[in-house]
Image (cartoon, rainbow, N blue to C red; front, side, top):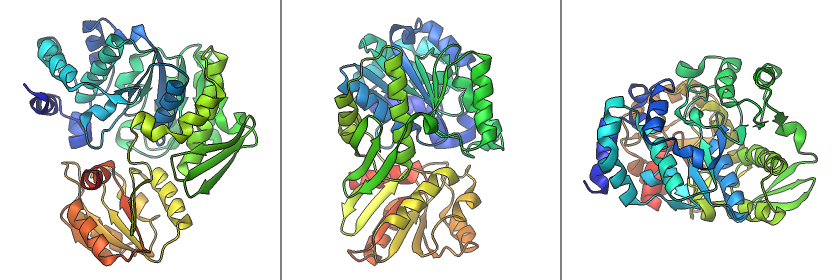
Length: 428
């Protein structure tokens, strides 16, 4: 098999949650543990940092990876989903996994892993661990896929666990209240292993983390209380942060969500230093301002065109979309155009009710089986006074928005990582 044939095999034999949703989801760690045994526990050969939470996992993971890279570590990064190329999920110092390794992995081991019937995520996680081990990395940043307690990645024994925040998402699997979801996310807290909470959100959620940490004697740090005199400002080139020990820390990533992520990362860096990591201050500055080039991060308040200005962001639930709405309110433009679509397993009403009404909408669907029909979105959006047209694919929606927009207008593309993936395939 060549590379494309190998990917098709993986998608067909091990259906991908990113594409088909619930049918691809496998709860529990049995498959992951069985796979790990086949490959002789490759994650034991390097240090790990585990990053979970509802939103901000990707930005936080990439920032940590960039800073550790600049500190001289050889850093593996396992994240999901990918937007354009499957290999975005598995990187070492920003470089994607070799296509040939993906081909050889399937060819060499499929007779061993097929009887286990692993999910796409379970298998690609193990692929990443084997790649990291063979490439002799120092540390891997491992992003949780879904939840925490029963997520495939929860077989690792990290140096640090990070939980960014808690929002209502994947309630079918994680629970229908924030404390229930927090309990699942808290499942990555390990015995005597420090944990950083980026944003507690409420006393009830904070107590879930406190109780879990106490039960396993894990040192617990809330970043909101740890970083003193923290200030975040937006400017034309990104973000500017100030805190005790950091003056004029420039951040390449944009958007109000990055304020929370930055504070979480700065806290995590201090905890890592306390447990023996060598992280010079200049590495923190360099990692923040060069995170995209160092790690290849895509789709976070990404400007893809200037006239008219076109921005895309992968926020896909009410918690994340609220950040987008806040940032849009701070942008300067004449008219606002929004190319919008969602996955069919999301709580669409919770998102529609917070979207700006002073925009022209171009409702569309992404090229995935999980995409919600554009006419259904348009019909439900009308109930919230969100008006616009429907388009059968993202390309047509973008063309319509550009045709209707003047140079001083703003076009935002989002609602789903799938929408952003289709858009980036056009612009990049």
